[in-house]
Amino acid sequence: MIQAAFNQTSGPQHNDGAIASAAWTRADAVALNALAAALLHRLAAELS
Figure 1 (cartoon, rainbow, N blue to C red):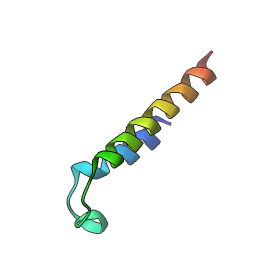
Figure 2 (tube, rainbow, N blue to C red):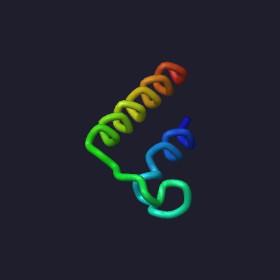
Figure 3 (spheres, rainbow, N blue to C red):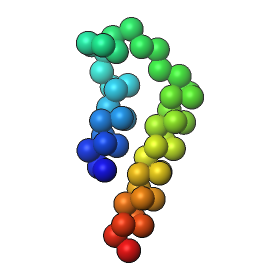
Figure 4 (tube, rainbow, N blue to C red):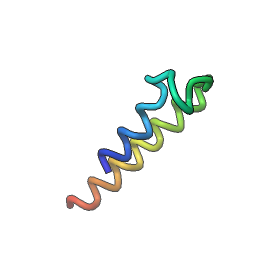
C-alpha cells in the first residue's frame, strides 16, 4: 500500500516521459490527498 501511494503521488514531481506535458491542478492535489487518506485508513484497519 505504501508503494501504491508513492507511485500515485510521485507523478507531479517529474516532467519527463509520458507525463511531460501534464498540467497539474488543484483538483489533482485534492484527489491525491484523498487517495493517501484512503490508503492510510485501510492500512490502519488492517493493522488493528
